[in-house]
Structure formats: structure tokens, C-alpha cells
Length: 509
Image (tube, rainbow, N blue to C red; front, side, top):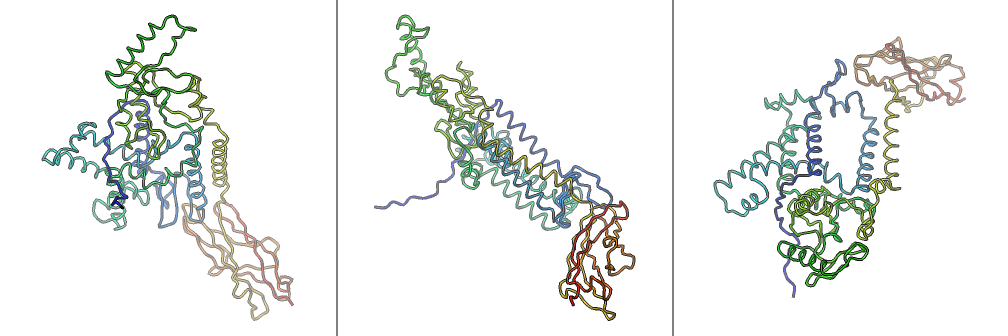
């Protein structure tokens, strides 16, 4: 008999408890830095000259240009952007291979904005227990007031998030004035509305679901992590079997009494005597009978933004935020036990630690062949991009022969070829460029629309110039099928020169 079972489990809201500690402090610092960069960067000014935008970071889609402080990337130089994306991917592989999902736990935008929303939630509704009571309470004027206040604060953050994003694509002060006067382009309002809605929903109502169901990285990370990867883990050989409250204290007192009655110690250490009524024991040579250090307080579960229990082992939902480490260390300090019951641990070190040995140092796990390979590739691409950035020519030109027809014969027998030469002026003021052929050439050059071989190009623009190259009747170039030639372009203001090679098509007799 078949039963009707749903494939979808409704979301159970998670209310993480506030925690303090070194990892929580690190997350606060990263959140402040990342949000500060995101919100402040569009307002930084950078003087590039009178004809260029003065915004330090700007994606100018209208002119197909990207500005980053002193760096200017044109549309035909998209390989710089592709290189940066490849570096970002390799960096993600490197960090995951070395430290697990450290990106997800500290710097992912979903994590950062969720943390910010949680701060607002705690500030308005209180810590975990207060929020649980409010969630389970029936609707009332107080509940409606608290929820409305929280949602209004979330909405303001979301609007600021969407607004900051559009400022990267046009001049920020001008766009802000247009937005406030309701005179901005509809695309700006549409983009802000979409980003506001997604931030509000993802950060406020779909927090852990985005990481578990929508983000592909939890599935990919399995290929990036291995036994030597440092990740957040529970030392079960030290924590199990768990004791709790009076039962734990009674077990410890009974163990102490048995130890005292056991007589002289062997080798300076009391012999281990099994405790009746306690299931399980810690594994390895370091194993001791009696309750483990874990008192089953669930502090690690209560602070987890994903709502998982790290004591169940590695899980897809774990984002390696390490808040469970802070919570557990706080409890261990209160009950007089060593910290580190939950901590960063490589699975390859677990047997050694369980046997009473010392784990390998963190650098031994970081500097592994795979990580060295990732870093080498990452650094090589970075250096190649920097090298390509500094060797970019000041004058860029392309030459395209007109193929239909390949040549024409004028009334006096002159053979003429036509070329389209595209010149780019990357400077902030108009420049004049003189076009010529290699000195001593048997060919003659002429420009369409001008007689002095000089073409004017506006500031920060490009121009397509039609050029005619001719061979006199009966000359060697006219009689051969192909003659190599070289075009030269000279910037009359700076004296810089560039050249491109091409071919002159003659009439083969």
C-alpha cells in the first residue's frame, strides 16, 4: 500500500544564539570591511582628466569601458576580466582545499548580509530564547510591532544594497540626485527593486536554504576537500560518551572514588576501570573510561546559523563559520575543561590525536602539493595579467583590407587597394595621428577626407579611417600578385608610433 508523502519539507526557522569569541570577532571584522568596501567604493573619486569620468571604480556599459583607479580596460581587452574570473575560481579552490568552506563562512555575500540581518533581528526581538517565544506566540500588537520594525530595518538595508550596486555603473552623485528627484532611467529603479527584493528575501527568510538548495558550491566542495583539509570538526574521542547535569557529576565522583580505591598507580597513572551504566568510550590509546568532556548542552547547535549539529560529523550544510568553536570553548572554560573539543581539524590527524599524539602543524596541511599547484596557477595568471597590463601599447591600430574588390585599376593604369584602419585614442584629449608607409616604399598612400595624411581622433575614442594605397603603372608592386607593406601610425603629440603589416594586391601579368 502506497502512502502519500511529500518530497518537500517545510522550512523550520532557525534562531541562532549570540556568541562571542575569536571567530565571531573575525566575522565581525570581515563583515565591516566587506560591507564598507561595497558601500563606499562608488563614492571614491579619481581624476583622469576633463574628458574622462572621475569615479574610481566604474563599469561604463554605454562606452564599453571599465575603470579601476588608474587602470582602464576597453571592451576588446576583456581577457583581463576573464583572467580575474579565473583567478577568483582558483582562489576559491585553494581556500577550500586548505580550509574547507572558509569563503562560505566568512566572506560570501549571502553570509555577510545574513549576519547583518541577524544583528538587526537580535537588536529588535532579543536573543534566541526571546525570538523563539515570539515566534511561537500568537499574533498580538507587540508581535506585530516587533516584526514590522524588523522588516522595515531589513528593507532599508536591502534598498541600500540595491542602490549601492547601481552606483557602480554610472556616476554615483549624479545618479543619486536623479533617483531622489525621480528623474533616473527606469532601468535604475528596476535594478534596485530586483536587488532589494532578493536581498530582503534571501537574507531574511531563506537564509540557510540559499546555501543548501540554491548554491552549487556545497556539492562542488566534495571534489576540493580531502583528508588533509582543515575544517571544523568535533573530537568525539574526547567528548564521548556525553554526560549531562547531575548524571555527569555523579559519574565523575564515582570515577574518582574508584580511582582512589584502586591502589597504587602504575607508571604514575591510575589504571582505567570500566564504569557500569555508561555506553561507549573514547577510541584510541588516549581513551579513558567515564563521561567525555561534552556535557550535551547543545550550545554548538544553538549558535549554528545552519541549524546543524557538528557532532554528527561533516555535513553538506556546514559553512565552516566556526561559531560552534566559540560556543564550545566558552562552555569548556566554564566547566574547567580544555578548549578545543570542537576546532579546526584534519581528518588525517584524527587517529593520531585519538591515540594521544600531537597533530601536524597547520602549515603542513596548507602547503600540500594540490594547494601549491593551485597557488602556482593563481600566481602565474596574476603575473601574466600584470605583465600584459604594463606592455599594452599606447597606440592601438588594426588594418583590414577591403576584399571586394581586392584591387581596382584606375584610368591611367594605376593599381589601387583599399584598407580600413581603426585607431584608438586612449588619452583624455583629442589627438592627431599621421599615417604612412615604410620609408622607401614604392607604394603611395592617401587618406579619405584629408590630403595631409593626418587624421583627428576625439578623446578616449576610436575612429575608422578609409585608406587608399596605389602602385604606379608598370611598377613592381603593380605587376606582382602580392607585395608586403607596413602601415605606420604616429601620435603627433607624444611621438609614439605603432605599425601593422599587410599585403598589397597587384595584377599578375
